Image (tube, rainbow, N blue to C red):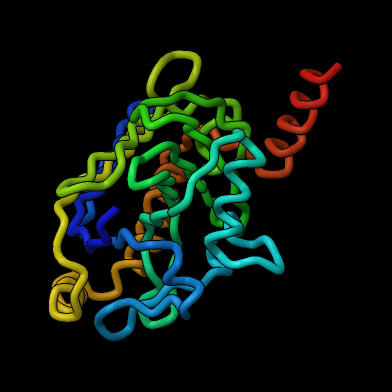
Length: 246
């Protein structure tokens, strides 16, 4: 596992019931989770991680690394010895990560991935890719967007970071793909000059992410795209899960 900062292009394309597409360029970090046990500071000014930003690392009484490793072992039985985190950092104290990626390694070999999906209500859900294979599918059962059913399916393409990252999460409904999200980027050395260069090139990147999320949500609302209220959607998910265990 090699730490890096990635200059990335993020693309969202909605196909149904209306077409909407946007791209944003910025940067993100791939670091050893052990950094969060040493204060979370990153090269370059203004950037840091906080353990509390990631629910996967919330287990009390253990280190961030132990929290991540024990989560994977409890949920999948897979043992690992190192964890890499691909996520936006705090920039000047602010961050929002729609998705964070935890890559697990055993003796230097990638063995599993955990995807932590966040919504703007401060809630998270984890999806486990319990093998090094880069593709997986899982039913969402989680309120992410008011414009997509919580029962949609995620089809994910997530390979471990290297010289490039190439990640896709496509949300499928009953009639096919509804939202396509892609992130592609190239690695740079994780050094102060490289990070500061990207900070100057893409100032306040994490703020721009949350502003764009709300701006495009407003556009969908004005175009009268069907809206799923959160309380109704959450109740439907709970009801469906209860039925599945009967």
